[in-house]
Every structure is written in structure tokens, then in C-alpha cells.
Length: 92
Image (cartoon, rainbow, N blue to C red; front, side):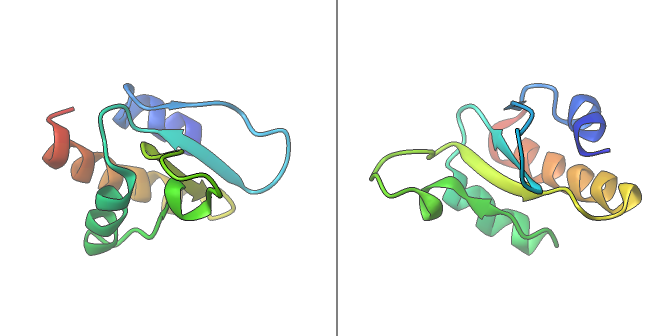
């Protein structure tokens, strides 16, 4: 459900299928993940900015971590909100 919503609402985003775990790492080209995470939270969706989980400075600055264990309708709504936020930030 998360991948389908991303393909529809955020086609410029990039990700790979995880080999395990309940999270998807999403790359948002041209986006500061820390700023995006704050804006997303203001829009009602909590995501984790990549730099907060990296032990190396300057890594994952354009990535967010999104869990995908919610109901499909919840995931779709979350992506709709994330897409709105990203469009406001970057015009995508």
C-alpha cells in the first residue's frame, strides 16, 4: 500500500524494497530531510529524518524513514499529506 501510494502521489521519490523490518527508507531528491520531517509533522505525519539515524555527519540528508505497518488507508492518507508537504517545499 505504501509503495503504491508513493508511485501515485510522489513519483519522483526513490526507495528500495527492504530485505527486512517494518520501515521504508525514502529518498526525496533535493530535499532537506530534517526540514521536511518538521513540515510533515505540522501536516499530521511523523517521519524520521535520515540524519537523525546516521552515525556519520552529512549522511542520509535527503532520506526519511517511514513505517509501513499501518492499515492501507492510513498509509495512503499519510502519503497524500507527505506529497502535499513535499510539493510545498520543492514544487514536485
